[in-house]
Length: 380
Ligand code: ZN
Image (cartoon, rainbow, N blue to C red; front, side, top):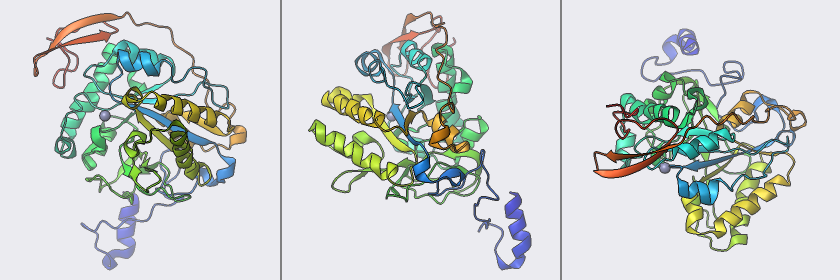
């Protein structure tokens, strides 16, 4: 704000100060870490790519249920460690319907990040594109209430969102985040994925110059709120995708591993912007060899001593405090598993709007009614 006023005073009649909204360019002197970071391709802190760790953001979308937990999530991280000796960790973007809160709590307890992906995950992108701040609060902050009440996830541990269908609502999304003290969004794809041209996460202290494949995108500033761009992957035919499982239909395991490595190396051999490894468990369930490919790729990452598989929030912590690989030893303390305070109970409730039964595994006494968007606590 200050910069904009200053620009208007300095350039007075030369520029239009009203709707043209001139503002100074974001740079290192008017936007400083840890709470402000300009959009760009340079390594934060002025470090050289070869001297920094390559961060891999591993994320999974949609409800955590008994099937994907037992078949996949409970096995996906076993004995996997980062170079600092701590366990690898992932971010889970969960939704409410069919969620197993007991297992969600277990993933949190094991050191993973639980993030918000809405209560309803309602079909139809128009609903999400045009949602008001209030509607977005019902979807995302209501879900925060549910995860806290039924899954014992501490409120302060939930810091970010991913919009269903990656369909944000422009400024309303970021206004909702700022208003509710959420730190980041990871829903906004970018096709800017050429080697050394990959954008780092940045804050909206200045209007974003990022490409906007899924409009609307914010036109205003939202100081302190981070955008974690979903940097596209690309297959051999040059087809772009924001999620690994949307890109390609490779049925050969080795080819799939090579595809993962090729995308990884555009980051690792370039400016080392965080590498997105964004998946749905359904992708593994549909074809078991994909889980083998995932494991082979993670095995490969473990052979590289400057690669860390972390949550989205951990990646941002590094960006806020850029640290060379040689000093990463105690950058993150290893997660200490908290005492298990979940007293699991299975609740049978009716989701009234569709007239269907739901079984909820939760960590607290059963709510009076099925929790939903207008009544996230499920009170009478
Ligand atoms: Zn989803």
